[in-house]
Length: 331
Image (tube, rainbow, N blue to C red):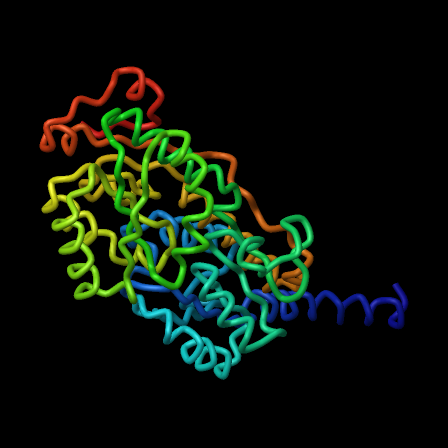
């Protein structure tokens, strides 16, 4: 072999491991902002399946916290009026991308930066005017939706009526800032099922404010309770279940975590799947994809979870036909 033929090949061979090592050791920094609740739950040991599956999938893809990935955790602490300031604080730290848990958080981050990629997790990005379409979100936004079909709320109301046919008056627990938008998909199914909805509205999702609203519910004495689906509320799910239990009223929840904590009924998307899909988006963006070019994922799997222990404590008998349709029955 002639020297001039051998040397370039040798140099390439020697350089290849070094280049590979550089690629593998490339550091990324992401921010995860939840709307309410503790930042300690943003981990692979979280009681929320979304976070557990998010970190598990990131590891599978090679994005490992403490090795090539730094994760900064933030919470809006259930106070929508603070989201804008928090978003500006996060954006000023210039992360590679932001995972925004709920549309209000995503809106605040987008208002603070139109260049940092945003991965939305939850809610309806179309109704929130965060994306032009699911297939082509555009701008610096992509993510996973959990509420893009407004019919899901009508389905929740229908299941509640099937479980307790006598229900005619329901207290709907929601943030005051979101009530008008969230209640819209429930008006027509409510009329069809002859159920009137009364908004029990929180100024913020904090323990004190939740106790105040549940005090109003106790005085109002509705037939049942529905809990809104925004992550601002979900961060307080153990306390919400506790307060519902004290009210001695049946309740329909948006996610299985509420039922696992002792609630009666839940119907909603598989949040674990949402966590995995969010991790996929994060991985793609960290490896050069543009957020606005990644289609927003719409879930195909919805779960009905029923807690018979909760039903028994309320003196309720859940119809066998409804039990037969449940994805899981907790005894």
